[in-house]
Amino acid sequence: MHDANLLVGMDRPDDAGVYRVSDDLALILTLDFFTPIVDDPYDFGQIAVANALSDVYAMGGTPKLVMNIICFPVKDMDVSVLEEVLRGGTDKMVEAGVLLVGGHSVEDREIKYGLSVTGMVHPDRVLKNAGALPGDALVLTKALGTGIIATAVKAEMADPAAEQVIVASMKALNRVPAEVMAGFDVHACTDITGFGFLGHACEMIEDTAVGMHIFASRVPVFPEALEYAAMGLIPAGAYRNEGFRKAMVDVRPGVGDNLRMVLYDPQTSGGLLIALPSGQAENLVSRLHAQGITGAGIVGETSAREPGRIVVLP
Image 1 (cartoon, helix red, strand yellow):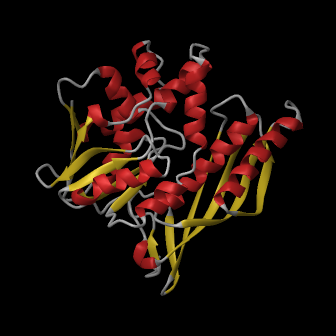
Image 2 (spheres, rainbow, N blue to C red; image 1 turned 90 degrees about the vertical axis):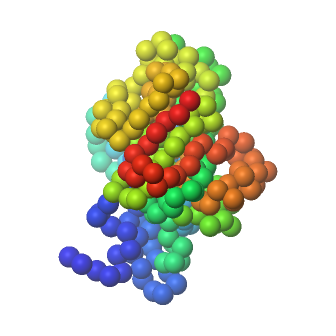
Image 3 (cartoon, helix red, strand yellow; image 1 turned 60 degrees about the vertical axis):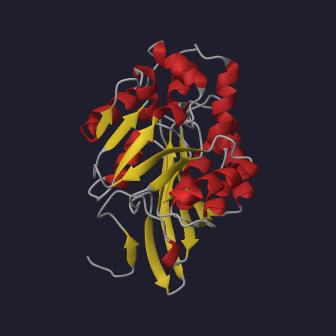
């Protein structure tokens, strides 16, 4: 069914749906939930909430209302675990300034947690993942490699310090980057999650008139992720991401196999990938650094020479 007020729907992959309710207000609608990626239930609750809210930030909006989605094995797991998950989630909601208005729970054999989120944005300020223009710079706000390091954690082969680093990254809201980028002429934005950096970059240029050059050496990466990738501790999702998108991606000689897999690594609660005029990119990065987003950097550029393709350079 056609509705002129549906500004972002299912016609192409994007981070959330957007519906215009008035000339100056549109609603952003999204949901996300998953099984634990860390052992600590409080951290898991915080990560799940930060991850779910991220889609609204990526669309240029402000999350306002949330509803809990809970699956829990009440017969096999102590309810105190659920209490800690919800405590972590609630604390992250308070940090984000959103209101919990309800939710739904079911008994399941495996714990799962996340949110349904409603955000708000001016209809003229909606950011889509497509829309980058030739000559734009690409800015990434968080380092990559959380999936690989989490795989090493599950295998009990990770340094505890590396686990603490990725937990801190995944718990961090994309609120500050979203607020900072609002002062710039952003053409497109997405958040980096399960499809990996290159998977989501492919979504940004698929069926468009632009391509991308990614400078692999400039992409922020957790050093331990390269170490663990070299040990073969690569999640199956990274191989699936590569298999699905490799026809669109040209990885040039000099980009090592380990780094290539990090670029496909499925992230949880990853950073924002922002396309904006090249002349504004350094200023954006400087302002992000000043606001504590120290991992942000310019990682590539768009071009009209190879539309619909990504070239990964050393």
